[in-house]
Amino acid sequence: MTHARRFTVIDNDRPSVAMARTGDATQPNHAGRTHDHSYSAHETICFEGDSAKSIYEIHSGSVMLYKLLPDGRRQVVEMLGTGDLFGFTADGTHDCSAETLVPSVIRTLDAGRTAESGAMQAEFNRCLIRQMEQMHEHAMLLGRKSAFERVSSYLMKLVPERGGAKCVGPREGADDWEVVLSMTRQEIADFLGLTIETVSRVLSEMKRRGLIRITKQDRIHIRRVCDICKQTGYH
Amino acid sequence: MTHARRFTVIDNDRPSVAMARTGDATQPNHAGRTHDHSYSAHETICFEGDSAKSIYEIHSGSVMLYKLLPDGRRQVVEMLGTGDLFGFTADGTHDCSAETLVPSVIRTLDAGRTAESGAMQAEFNRCLIRQMEQMHEHAMLLGRKSAFERVSSYLMKLVPERGGAKCVGPREGADDWEVVLSMTRQEIADFLGLTIETVSRVLSEMKRRGLIRITKQDRIHIRRVCDICKQTGYH
DNA sequence: CGAGCTGTTGAGGCTTCTCAAAGAAAGTGG
DNA sequence: CCACTTTCTTTGAGAAGCCTCAACAGCTCG
Image (cartoon, rainbow over all chains, first blue to last red):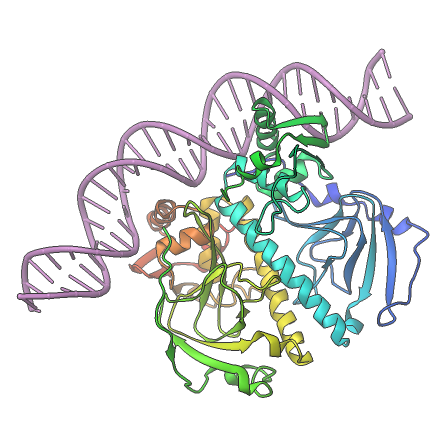
């Protein structure tokens, strides 16, 4: 068996914080039934298995979606950012839990209403397609990449406009970059299908090789972006 | 390592089995711009990187989508069946290759046209949401399950109405079932993020434990479905 | 300043992979 | 219909990678 720290649903259970939140501007915007809701970092928006009454739009901030196995193994299946939608369901219940990574404003769209609007359908469609392509890429990472490649791929996701097909190539002069991690090591591990120790070891090894400097725990300075990119498995 | 080979596309406008499937958002309007093509087993429908001119609908049969790394590592990211759609793209090129697993009839929908129809958008979204939920589940499998759990999960996918949330439970009397594999060991391995040897070893181990009998290479008799289900990680 | 987290490092073990070879099954041509 | 080739599958032995367990270090906050 693989995998490490086990989560229990209890660990993540702090809905009261979210509920107690105040100052939510209720904006009648789209089809009439939307609310904006502010969350601080690491708050749960919805739980796997909850009956789904809404679709959520990330107005600002970022969110991770994850699933749990009964024994507590966790897999973070998606990382989403501003403009992304989540909470779609085929059968009326959410298949994932959703948790903020940073302070975020989440717009709640009434699920029944939204289906009526054609423009919104098209927007849903665009968003789902983009997310689906990311899932395909993530499946490749989880199924076929080494720990080193996984962490490298993760870092590259955090460097804007670099990596992948539409990479703009190294900047003139210095090709360094500082990424800010909004996830803990545990969350990164659960995203990459690794253990926390392995993530830590890979980062230490990168440090040893002079590829990165860890300035603060959540700040990683990449000496040359291209060097990390070459470790992602795509070169 | 890759099995990608191009075959000649045979034109064949055979009347459709799947047509009765649902209310036909797919059938009438854009009749000017759809074609049905017949493929035999293990033919490639489109390649990763191809410019995407169409969306495909599986009229009958089944299809796998896969991605390759430059060094030849392959990940099968989705398995699709009758009624499923694929070939959606965010940037104009296919992010996956698609290959039939069994003889299949594939309907080609002109990508430009389809965007106009609201009914079709809704159908696309339904399909994407279902596929997205499957991707989430697959990410869990790839990131967190052991080889034994992966193969068990795979077998359960092939037993109708069993496993997952909407499992109907064991039948009265015998709880056995024979599944027909439409994938080779290599394809199964690439789907499950394992090697062909590991898949083979797990199946042999299941045989040794009396959980299954392999009647032909592509036919597996499950002695008691519940026993396999208990090995999927969900119990 | 100590408690409580989060992250790092080490030693050892287990699962899965790699490499190699042999055994079935399926396709081919005489 | 049978030898032959090719492809697919199974099995074994050994290695590698990642995980588990355990202890320690560093940061944060009262």
